[in-house]
Length: 336
Ligand SMILES: Cc1cc2nc3c(=O)[nH]c(=O)nc-3n(C[C@H](O)[C@H](O)[C@H](O)COP(=O)(O)O)c2cc1C
Image 1: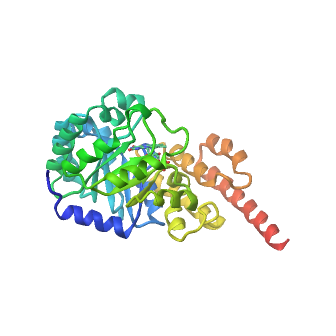
Image 2: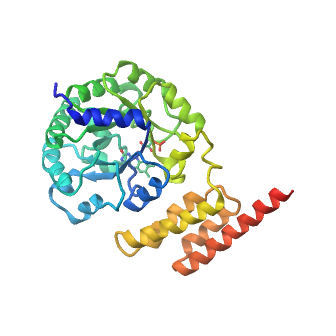
Image 3: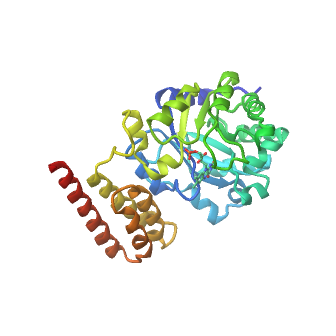
Protein backbone atom coordinates (compact mmCIF):
# COMPACT_ATOMS: atom_id res chain seq x y z
CA UNK A 1 0.00 0.00 0.00
CA UNK A 2 1.25 3.48 -0.86
CA UNK A 3 1.07 5.83 2.13
CA UNK A 4 -0.51 9.23 1.76
CA UNK A 5 1.85 11.88 3.10
CA UNK A 6 1.06 15.30 4.51
CA UNK A 7 -1.22 15.72 1.53
CA UNK A 8 -3.69 13.33 3.16
CA UNK A 9 -3.67 15.30 6.36
CA UNK A 10 -4.20 18.55 4.49
CA UNK A 11 -7.09 17.00 2.66
CA UNK A 12 -8.57 15.47 5.82
CA UNK A 13 -8.31 18.85 7.52
CA UNK A 14 -10.26 20.31 4.66
CA UNK A 15 -12.87 17.59 5.12
CA UNK A 16 -13.34 18.42 8.78
CA UNK A 17 -13.28 22.17 8.20
CA UNK A 18 -15.64 22.22 5.27
CA UNK A 19 -18.00 19.39 4.59
CA UNK A 20 -19.16 20.73 1.23
CA UNK A 21 -17.59 20.46 -2.23
CA UNK A 22 -18.40 22.02 -5.60
CA UNK A 23 -18.68 19.19 -8.15
CA UNK A 24 -16.86 19.02 -11.48
CA UNK A 25 -19.43 20.01 -14.11
CA UNK A 26 -18.41 19.95 -17.76
CA UNK A 27 -19.41 23.16 -19.51
CA UNK A 28 -20.30 24.80 -16.17
CA UNK A 29 -17.44 25.02 -13.65
CA UNK A 30 -15.42 27.45 -15.74
CA UNK A 31 -13.09 29.92 -13.97
CA UNK A 32 -15.78 32.63 -14.17
CA UNK A 33 -18.48 30.43 -12.72
CA UNK A 34 -16.12 29.27 -9.97
CA UNK A 35 -15.52 32.95 -9.14
CA UNK A 36 -19.26 33.41 -8.71
CA UNK A 37 -19.55 30.36 -6.44
CA UNK A 38 -16.58 31.57 -4.40
CA UNK A 39 -18.49 34.72 -3.43
CA UNK A 40 -20.49 32.34 -1.19
CA UNK A 41 -18.07 29.50 -0.49
CA UNK A 42 -14.46 29.17 0.59
CA UNK A 43 -14.25 25.42 0.03
CA UNK A 44 -13.03 23.18 -2.76
CA UNK A 45 -14.46 23.51 -6.26
CA UNK A 46 -13.50 21.20 -9.11
CA UNK A 47 -12.68 22.13 -12.68
CA UNK A 48 -14.60 20.58 -15.54
CA UNK A 49 -13.23 17.14 -16.43
CA UNK A 50 -10.03 17.46 -18.46
CA UNK A 51 -8.72 14.84 -20.91
CA UNK A 52 -5.37 13.33 -19.94
CA UNK A 53 -4.79 12.54 -23.62
CA UNK A 54 -5.30 16.19 -24.58
CA UNK A 55 -3.01 17.33 -21.77
CA UNK A 56 -0.19 14.94 -22.61
CA UNK A 57 -0.26 16.27 -26.20
CA UNK A 58 -0.36 19.85 -24.90
CA UNK A 59 -3.42 20.31 -27.09
CA UNK A 60 -4.48 23.99 -27.03
CA UNK A 61 -8.19 23.08 -26.77
CA UNK A 62 -7.43 21.05 -23.63
CA UNK A 63 -4.82 23.33 -22.06
CA UNK A 64 -7.46 26.05 -21.85
CA UNK A 65 -9.16 24.03 -19.08
CA UNK A 66 -6.17 24.72 -16.81
CA UNK A 67 -6.84 28.43 -16.95
CA UNK A 68 -7.78 30.00 -13.62
CA UNK A 69 -8.76 33.48 -12.49
CA UNK A 70 -7.43 35.24 -9.41
CA UNK A 71 -8.62 33.92 -6.04
CA UNK A 72 -9.58 30.58 -7.57
CA UNK A 73 -8.54 28.42 -4.66
CA UNK A 74 -8.84 25.81 -3.25
CA UNK A 75 -9.18 24.17 -6.63
CA UNK A 76 -9.62 20.51 -7.52
CA UNK A 77 -8.47 19.46 -10.99
CA UNK A 78 -10.47 16.60 -12.42
CA UNK A 79 -8.94 14.39 -15.09
CA UNK A 80 -10.43 11.69 -17.28
CA UNK A 81 -8.75 8.96 -19.29
CA UNK A 82 -8.37 5.21 -19.02
CA UNK A 83 -4.64 4.66 -19.55
CA UNK A 84 -2.19 4.68 -16.64
CA UNK A 85 0.54 6.34 -18.72
CA UNK A 86 -1.96 9.07 -19.63
CA UNK A 87 -1.77 10.12 -15.97
CA UNK A 88 2.00 9.69 -15.79
CA UNK A 89 2.37 12.13 -18.68
CA UNK A 90 -0.46 14.56 -18.00
CA UNK A 91 -0.16 15.24 -14.27
CA UNK A 92 3.24 16.94 -14.67
CA UNK A 93 1.61 19.15 -17.32
CA UNK A 94 -1.07 20.11 -14.77
CA UNK A 95 1.50 20.73 -12.05
CA UNK A 96 3.56 22.85 -14.43
CA UNK A 97 0.65 25.27 -14.63
CA UNK A 98 -1.14 24.98 -11.28
CA UNK A 99 -0.85 23.79 -7.71
CA UNK A 100 -4.24 22.22 -7.16
CA UNK A 101 -5.49 21.27 -3.69
CA UNK A 102 -6.55 17.90 -5.09
CA UNK A 103 -6.35 15.91 -8.31
CA UNK A 104 -9.40 13.77 -9.01
CA UNK A 105 -9.96 10.95 -11.48
CA UNK A 106 -13.35 10.74 -13.15
CA UNK A 107 -14.73 7.20 -13.11
CA UNK A 108 -18.37 8.21 -12.98
CA UNK A 109 -19.21 9.92 -16.26
CA UNK A 110 -21.97 8.03 -18.14
CA UNK A 111 -21.76 10.09 -21.36
CA UNK A 112 -21.39 7.91 -24.50
CA UNK A 113 -18.45 9.80 -25.98
CA UNK A 114 -16.47 9.38 -22.75
CA UNK A 115 -17.45 5.70 -22.33
CA UNK A 116 -16.35 4.98 -25.91
CA UNK A 117 -12.75 5.83 -25.01
CA UNK A 118 -12.95 3.47 -22.02
CA UNK A 119 -13.05 6.43 -19.59
CA UNK A 120 -15.62 7.58 -17.02
CA UNK A 121 -17.96 4.82 -15.82
CA UNK A 122 -16.41 2.35 -18.29
CA UNK A 123 -13.38 2.26 -15.99
CA UNK A 124 -15.48 0.68 -13.23
CA UNK A 125 -15.64 -2.51 -15.31
CA UNK A 126 -11.89 -3.14 -15.06
CA UNK A 127 -10.70 -3.10 -11.45
CA UNK A 128 -7.14 -4.14 -12.32
CA UNK A 129 -6.82 -1.14 -14.61
CA UNK A 130 -8.24 1.11 -11.87
CA UNK A 131 -5.45 -0.02 -9.56
CA UNK A 132 -2.87 0.72 -12.28
CA UNK A 133 -4.36 4.11 -13.06
CA UNK A 134 -4.49 5.21 -9.40
CA UNK A 135 -0.97 3.92 -8.85
CA UNK A 136 0.39 5.85 -11.84
CA UNK A 137 -1.56 9.00 -10.94
CA UNK A 138 -0.45 8.81 -7.32
CA UNK A 139 3.21 8.56 -8.33
CA UNK A 140 2.87 11.50 -10.71
CA UNK A 141 0.88 13.63 -8.22
CA UNK A 142 3.53 13.31 -5.47
CA UNK A 143 2.39 15.32 -2.49
CA UNK A 144 -0.84 16.52 -4.11
CA UNK A 145 -3.79 14.53 -2.70
CA UNK A 146 -5.46 12.18 -5.14
CA UNK A 147 -9.17 11.35 -5.10
CA UNK A 148 -11.45 9.38 -7.38
CA UNK A 149 -15.09 9.96 -8.27
CA UNK A 150 -17.24 6.91 -8.96
CA UNK A 151 -20.81 5.70 -9.21
CA UNK A 152 -22.25 2.62 -7.47
CA UNK A 153 -21.35 0.45 -10.45
CA UNK A 154 -22.39 -0.21 -14.04
CA UNK A 155 -25.92 -1.29 -13.10
CA UNK A 156 -27.78 -2.71 -10.10
CA UNK A 157 -26.47 -6.21 -10.89
CA UNK A 158 -22.85 -5.16 -10.94
CA UNK A 159 -22.39 -2.72 -8.10
CA UNK A 160 -18.67 -2.86 -7.26
CA UNK A 161 -18.28 0.41 -5.36
CA UNK A 162 -16.94 -1.37 -2.26
CA UNK A 163 -14.26 -3.18 -4.28
CA UNK A 164 -13.21 0.03 -6.01
CA UNK A 165 -13.09 1.99 -2.75
CA UNK A 166 -10.85 -0.76 -1.33
CA UNK A 167 -8.53 -0.48 -4.34
CA UNK A 168 -8.48 3.31 -3.99
CA UNK A 169 -7.38 2.94 -0.39
CA UNK A 170 -4.72 0.35 -1.20
CA UNK A 171 -3.27 2.46 -4.00
CA UNK A 172 -3.05 5.60 -1.87
CA UNK A 173 -6.05 7.71 -2.86
CA UNK A 174 -7.10 10.06 -0.05
CA UNK A 175 -10.86 9.94 -0.49
CA UNK A 176 -13.57 8.70 -2.82
CA UNK A 177 -16.56 10.67 -4.02
CA UNK A 178 -19.52 8.36 -4.50
CA UNK A 179 -22.47 9.44 -6.65
CA UNK A 180 -25.29 7.23 -5.38
CA UNK A 181 -26.45 6.05 -8.79
CA UNK A 182 -25.30 3.41 -11.27
CA UNK A 183 -24.21 4.13 -14.82
CA UNK A 184 -27.51 2.62 -15.98
CA UNK A 185 -29.42 5.07 -13.76
CA UNK A 186 -27.77 7.95 -15.63
CA UNK A 187 -29.52 10.85 -13.80
CA UNK A 188 -32.92 9.21 -13.36
CA UNK A 189 -34.71 8.36 -10.12
CA UNK A 190 -33.40 9.49 -6.79
CA UNK A 191 -30.01 8.95 -5.27
CA UNK A 192 -29.62 5.60 -3.44
CA UNK A 193 -28.62 6.70 0.07
CA UNK A 194 -28.58 3.15 1.46
CA UNK A 195 -25.61 2.17 -0.71
CA UNK A 196 -23.72 5.32 0.20
CA UNK A 197 -24.25 4.44 3.88
CA UNK A 198 -23.03 0.90 3.14
CA UNK A 199 -19.87 2.26 1.48
CA UNK A 200 -19.20 4.55 4.45
CA UNK A 201 -19.59 1.67 6.92
CA UNK A 202 -16.98 -0.45 5.09
CA UNK A 203 -14.53 2.14 3.76
CA UNK A 204 -11.12 2.74 5.28
CA UNK A 205 -10.92 6.22 3.74
CA UNK A 206 -13.28 9.21 3.72
CA UNK A 207 -16.31 9.01 1.47
CA UNK A 208 -17.77 12.18 -0.04
CA UNK A 209 -21.44 11.65 -0.81
CA UNK A 210 -22.90 13.03 -4.01
CA UNK A 211 -26.28 13.19 -5.67
CA UNK A 212 -29.45 15.29 -5.53
CA UNK A 213 -28.44 17.65 -2.70
CA UNK A 214 -30.46 20.78 -3.39
CA UNK A 215 -31.85 21.91 -0.02
CA UNK A 216 -31.67 21.35 3.75
CA UNK A 217 -33.66 18.14 3.62
CA UNK A 218 -31.52 16.47 0.97
CA UNK A 219 -28.34 17.78 2.62
CA UNK A 220 -29.39 16.29 5.96
CA UNK A 221 -30.36 13.02 4.25
CA UNK A 222 -26.90 12.80 2.73
CA UNK A 223 -25.21 13.62 6.07
CA UNK A 224 -27.23 10.84 7.74
CA UNK A 225 -25.34 8.28 5.62
CA UNK A 226 -22.25 9.18 7.65
CA UNK A 227 -20.26 10.67 4.77
CA UNK A 228 -17.25 12.86 5.55
CA UNK A 229 -18.21 15.42 2.96
CA UNK A 230 -20.98 16.31 0.53
CA UNK A 231 -20.44 17.24 -3.10
CA UNK A 232 -23.04 19.37 -4.87
CA UNK A 233 -23.40 19.60 -8.64
CA UNK A 234 -26.69 20.69 -10.15
CA UNK A 235 -27.75 22.50 -6.97
CA UNK A 236 -24.67 24.72 -7.35
CA UNK A 237 -25.24 25.15 -11.07
CA UNK A 238 -28.68 26.65 -10.44
CA UNK A 239 -27.90 28.35 -7.13
CA UNK A 240 -24.21 29.21 -6.79
CA UNK A 241 -25.04 30.50 -3.28
CA UNK A 242 -26.27 27.07 -2.13
CA UNK A 243 -23.21 26.41 0.04
CA UNK A 244 -23.64 29.57 2.12
CA UNK A 245 -27.39 28.91 2.44
CA UNK A 246 -26.89 25.32 3.63
CA UNK A 247 -24.11 26.23 6.05
CA UNK A 248 -26.51 28.83 7.50
CA UNK A 249 -29.22 26.14 7.52
CA UNK A 250 -31.42 28.28 5.29
CA UNK A 251 -33.52 27.40 2.24
CA UNK A 252 -31.40 28.09 -0.90
CA UNK A 253 -34.57 28.92 -2.86
CA UNK A 254 -35.28 32.01 -0.78
CA UNK A 255 -31.74 32.79 0.42
CA UNK A 256 -30.88 35.55 -2.03
CA UNK A 257 -32.73 38.85 -2.28
CA UNK A 258 -33.60 39.98 -5.84
CA UNK A 259 -31.14 42.92 -5.74
CA UNK A 260 -28.24 40.63 -4.91
CA UNK A 261 -29.31 38.22 -7.62
CA UNK A 262 -29.35 41.06 -10.14
CA UNK A 263 -25.79 41.96 -9.13
CA UNK A 264 -24.75 38.34 -9.68
CA UNK A 265 -26.33 38.22 -13.11
CA UNK A 266 -24.33 41.27 -14.20
CA UNK A 267 -21.21 39.91 -12.56
CA UNK A 268 -21.32 36.60 -14.42
CA UNK A 269 -21.67 38.50 -17.72
CA UNK A 270 -18.73 40.77 -16.86
CA UNK A 271 -16.58 37.80 -15.82
CA UNK A 272 -17.47 35.79 -18.92
CA UNK A 273 -16.77 38.82 -21.11
CA UNK A 274 -13.36 39.30 -19.50
CA UNK A 275 -12.39 35.63 -19.44
CA UNK A 276 -14.40 33.94 -22.18
CA UNK A 277 -12.82 31.23 -24.26
CA UNK A 278 -13.70 33.01 -27.47
CA UNK A 279 -16.11 35.72 -28.42
CA UNK A 280 -19.35 33.92 -27.60
CA UNK A 281 -19.39 35.13 -24.02
CA UNK A 282 -22.98 36.33 -24.24
CA UNK A 283 -24.25 32.86 -25.21
CA UNK A 284 -22.27 31.28 -22.36
CA UNK A 285 -23.56 33.84 -19.86
CA UNK A 286 -27.19 33.34 -20.87
CA UNK A 287 -27.42 29.76 -19.62
CA UNK A 288 -26.13 30.82 -16.19
CA UNK A 289 -28.53 33.76 -16.08
CA UNK A 290 -31.51 31.58 -16.99
CA UNK A 291 -30.58 28.98 -14.35
CA UNK A 292 -30.12 31.61 -11.63
CA UNK A 293 -33.41 33.38 -12.40
CA UNK A 294 -35.41 30.17 -12.64
CA UNK A 295 -38.45 30.18 -10.34
CA UNK A 296 -38.77 33.96 -10.10
CA UNK A 297 -42.14 35.38 -11.22
CA UNK A 298 -42.04 35.99 -14.98
CA UNK A 299 -38.65 34.34 -15.48
CA UNK A 300 -40.03 31.50 -17.59
CA UNK A 301 -41.48 33.84 -20.20
CA UNK A 302 -38.32 35.96 -20.25
CA UNK A 303 -36.18 32.91 -21.02
CA UNK A 304 -36.76 32.81 -24.78
CA UNK A 305 -36.16 36.57 -25.03
CA UNK A 306 -32.87 36.19 -23.20
CA UNK A 307 -31.76 33.38 -25.51
CA UNK A 308 -32.78 35.39 -28.61
CA UNK A 309 -30.93 38.53 -27.52
CA UNK A 310 -27.58 39.08 -29.25
CA UNK A 311 -26.56 42.38 -27.75
CA UNK A 312 -25.20 43.05 -24.26
CA UNK A 313 -26.79 46.51 -23.97
CA UNK A 314 -30.20 45.08 -24.90
CA UNK A 315 -29.77 42.24 -22.44
CA UNK A 316 -28.85 44.72 -19.68
CA UNK A 317 -32.09 46.65 -20.26
CA UNK A 318 -34.11 43.41 -20.30
CA UNK A 319 -32.62 42.34 -16.99
CA UNK A 320 -33.02 45.77 -15.40
CA UNK A 321 -36.72 45.84 -16.39
CA UNK A 322 -37.21 42.31 -15.11
CA UNK A 323 -35.73 43.03 -11.69
CA UNK A 324 -37.68 46.29 -11.43
CA UNK A 325 -40.86 44.29 -11.95
CA UNK A 326 -39.77 41.80 -9.28
CA UNK A 327 -39.15 44.67 -6.86
CA UNK A 328 -42.64 46.01 -7.60
CA UNK A 329 -44.15 42.58 -6.89
CA UNK A 330 -42.18 42.29 -3.63
CA UNK A 331 -43.15 45.84 -2.59
CA UNK A 332 -46.83 45.09 -3.31
CA UNK A 333 -46.64 41.85 -1.32
CA UNK A 334 -44.98 43.48 1.69
CA UNK A 335 -47.53 46.32 1.79
CA UNK A 336 -50.51 43.93 1.72
C1 LIG B 1 -23.93 19.53 -16.73
C2 LIG B 1 -23.20 18.45 -15.96
C3 LIG B 1 -21.86 18.26 -16.19
C4 LIG B 1 -21.16 17.28 -15.47
N1 LIG B 1 -19.82 17.14 -15.66
C5 LIG B 1 -19.11 16.28 -14.89
C6 LIG B 1 -17.70 16.21 -14.98
O1 LIG B 1 -17.05 16.93 -15.75
N2 LIG B 1 -17.07 15.30 -14.16
C7 LIG B 1 -17.74 14.50 -13.28
O2 LIG B 1 -17.13 13.71 -12.55
N3 LIG B 1 -19.07 14.57 -13.17
C8 LIG B 1 -19.76 15.45 -13.93
N4 LIG B 1 -21.11 15.56 -13.77
C9 LIG B 1 -21.74 14.83 -12.65
C10 LIG B 1 -21.76 15.69 -11.38
O3 LIG B 1 -20.46 16.02 -10.95
C11 LIG B 1 -22.49 14.96 -10.22
O4 LIG B 1 -21.81 13.77 -9.94
C12 LIG B 1 -23.94 14.64 -10.59
O5 LIG B 1 -24.55 15.72 -11.24
C13 LIG B 1 -24.74 14.27 -9.34
O6 LIG B 1 -24.68 15.30 -8.38
P1 LIG B 1 -25.85 16.42 -8.24
O7 LIG B 1 -27.14 15.68 -8.09
O8 LIG B 1 -25.45 17.22 -7.05
O9 LIG B 1 -25.83 17.18 -9.53
C14 LIG B 1 -21.84 16.47 -14.51
C15 LIG B 1 -23.21 16.66 -14.31
C16 LIG B 1 -23.89 17.64 -15.02
C17 LIG B 1 -25.36 17.83 -14.76
